[in-house]
Image (cartoon, rainbow, N blue to C red; front, top):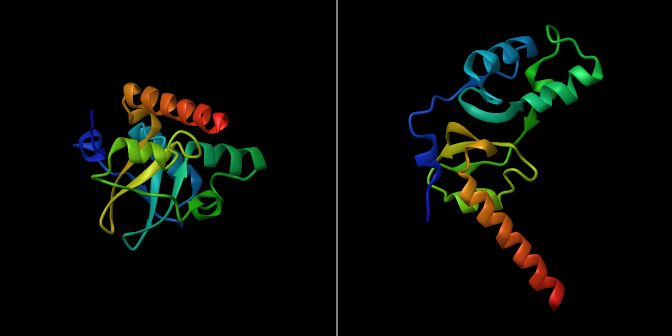
Length: 142
């Protein structure tokens, strides 16, 4: 069983925003597109990712105003990325679901999408979790 990120994201549109946009615009775009995260692009280059959690924890919870706070103020800078032809198992190893819920997907230097933990087929998540459990048990026995 092996699938790639390309297969999962096939036909999905990339949603992005500029670092100088305000959070209200970012939230509006997320709501309009049903997206949990936007890649932050400056002159076509990836400079960050902005997730719902970034908005809630780094802005709203801190009392920052959505019409005055810039995306660049709360985005995650220099995010971990995965390649479009990477295997799902490699993506899970990059800690998707553990440390990250969304990862920008690149094809060479070009950002082509965002992979959400929810996009990963459940059987891959179960196999990966089982592998982690077994690896931990093996390490404990040595």
